[in-house]
Figure 1 (spheres, rainbow, N blue to C red):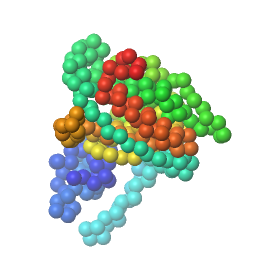
Figure 2: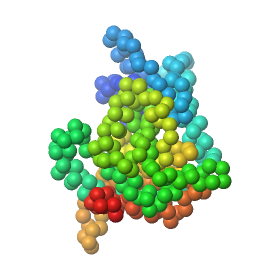
Figure 3: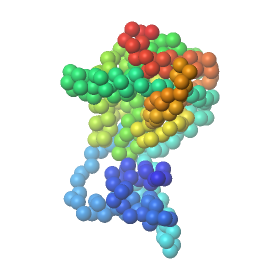
Figure 4: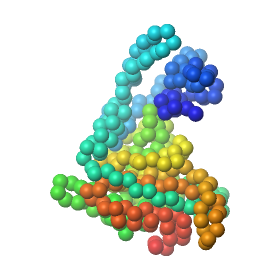
Length: 308
């Protein structure tokens, strides 16, 4: 199993960890192994100009400079200093701001993904043929959040001074992977979008993130965030809100687990959901109600079509 530092190095340097010989204990892969492999890879292939990364963080930070590194070696023990990118500095500042300002609390639930999985299997070919895009999970969750926010509008609100600002629209910040880390472009007016429009918007942002072409405007605003740690294998987490937003929904990996249904123990594809929220604005009853509404919509997607 790769450590978080090694996993991050693999993602940032685009190398195949299975092709690298580990120098750590019991042959484990180290961060230095990954960096060395990346250097060997770069020196053996023609250099290509990298596209400039534009405003990778929601706060409108400037593009990151190339990291300055210095290694110190004593025997087989090595250290390396790498200057934080502008994006990482901005992320660190904003996350710490959330902890310092908001009264953070997380509540959990789980959801049976059987109905959504069945719907995707049944309609994926027709959906892709008609719309030219795959039917993913995110479209269901964005629609479920839009539905639940109608019943619990505080999760889609923000605190400004001594006032609460409510929104009659849903601008969803969706976390997507970029070469330098996760970024959160905003799908605007998501509550008024179709499944196909949501999936196309997310796919377009994903491509822009990969190409380093996201702009500051792509990431400005947002009234609610959805983060999907499940794509990296996360079973459970406590996501941190993205100020000035007041709530974030964390999705996780789908895992077959035994559950009780109608008095019988059955195996179902289950996902844990986590809602982190600012307790100054959202109380526990509202948080639980919101998660239950999302759960009901995912377990019975017909609700998304008839607005229940």
